[in-house]
Length: 127
Image 1 (tube, one colour):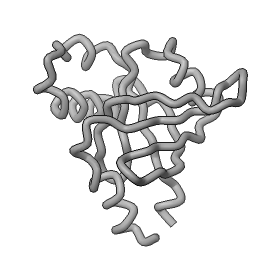
Image 2 (cartoon, rainbow, N blue to C red):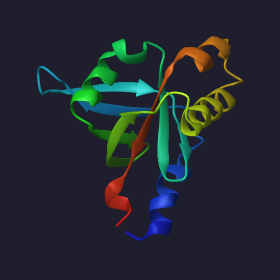
Image 3 (cartoon, one colour):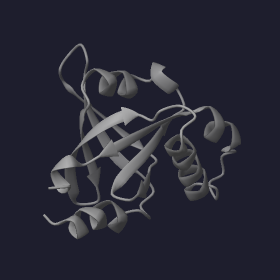
């Protein structure tokens, strides 16, 4: 897959309301699948955990970074990690997600300020 295709994959589905993230259970080794909001940017996906690092899916990806992402009819393998606090990427993730879901009925100000941003990269698409 060339770099242009890699960039198009997340962008193609950027308008979808959510994706399915599958992590591997840190204790059980079994798949753990959740539905979650996301934002796409430069071939990466950004998520936010309102439960911060107490959320099971975040604990799982901190133990085993390999994740599976389902968007519409596509499934891709990625590497997930929490975003470095107070970095430019941290602010980017927050801005992208709050802007995307600003029309929801929820008040996103606190969520956007206090949640833990996570990034998923797709190394096999960079080759």
